[in-house]
Length: 181
Image 1: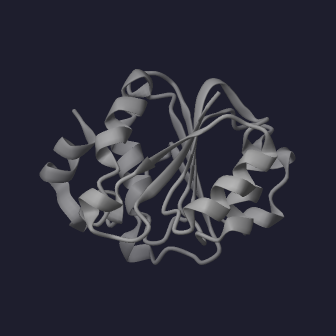
Image 2 (image 1 turned 90 degrees about the horizontal axis):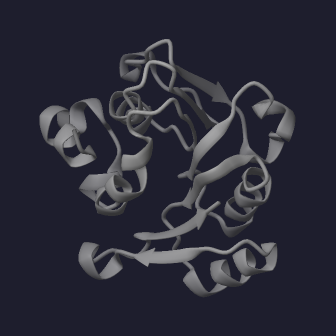
Image 3 (image 1 turned 60 degrees about the horizontal axis):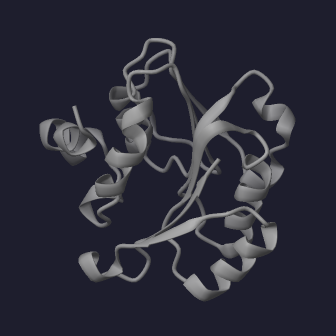
């Protein structure tokens, strides 16, 4: 099942995320994530918000040994939690994480949907790039200042590409920075 099919089946009520309703990220995510869908993967996301995308990843990545870890600086209301034992939510700031946090959690896919500030996005890539497994993916979502973010990411020295959905979305921050490891 694709992300779009899951969205159509259970919709915004279960997956309270803007990854499809405002942005059209499912277009690229279905291509990037398909090789991982039935494999035991570690998915890490910054920016839990209501927990909708965490629930989406939990349904999409269907291998029983898949683990999903999501962080935010605010707690998710209990009414929005529909988590399984494969999914863990931690209340922590990306700037407070160290490599030790990932000691027992190998990461294949890392997604930043947090504060959307250049400093936090850069800190995310700087921390996660050495930790993500070979063949893995790092994604920074909702980039609004493309030129300055490009400069900041180039300074890290890791190759990346940019996917700009703004013309499709008629929006201002539907831009992804994608690092393939």
